[in-house]
Image (cartoon, rainbow, N blue to C red; front, top):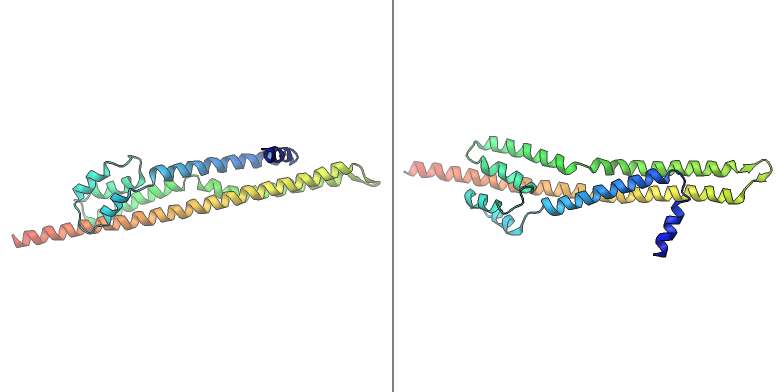
Length: 217
């Protein structure tokens, strides 16, 4: 607890650039919590359903029934529903609609990541600006007769160092979070594309089986 008070006390000497840096830190935290909630709540596929889709031979009607157990805002449900509900249409049409839906899902998952990307660039620049203003304040206290206020010079240097350190800290955290969720998004879309291919192949197999049955009859 004492360390927290020390950090808060040090921030008071960081100068005016501390305030926009704190705003960036709050924005990064909001985006991080929002993304964490979305991936935990709406980008999860139950293992029994995954194993069911991985099977080579299953009925679309059974899959449609299993999908009813998912949250209506689940992204996998949105994607699968496009394929399942249009399974009687031509395959090329299904693939086109599934691709459009995957693009919409990618856009939704990417929402907010641009904020983190901006923070990664802006935070160090604001920290550097705080460094410059702090050093300028320190140099202004050096007159022709020497140091006017040695304590003021020390405060200016402290302001420069605190702003720089805070800007770099925020940028590093935002960079790690941005890369994590970007990688998670790429994994999720690859998994969705792979499972979508399984569903389309199942539709093709059903069509071939139906044609062969008609020929035999």
